[in-house]
Image (cartoon, rainbow, N blue to C red; front, side, top):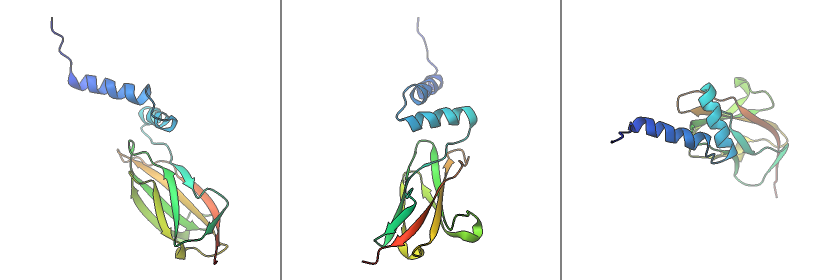
Length: 144
């Protein structure tokens, strides 16, 4: 007796097993469960800058995060002067592809001893937007 498998069902089952039972990392399995259960996407994890003070020494400040190219289509990075994330304080905004995990911003945009807040949101493959991850930091320019 021949058993004919429905290819679509087999692929769906394989994807389910890979996403749920074979986690590539803790964040990937958490995001897979979250996405399947709610249709939403987890907020991105910021890597740098996440300290209270950033000393600028070069021509660029590089913002870094953990990317998730499996679930994310794009990231939306916004930079505000001060602590408030309102449009009147927005000084830089950029949409970044999901295969990129950092973005360099010219240090000429920053003033010495000023506070800035950056936020990052992920946009999923189905268009859902995550909550924002954000961090505020004070800039010190090193003139030496």
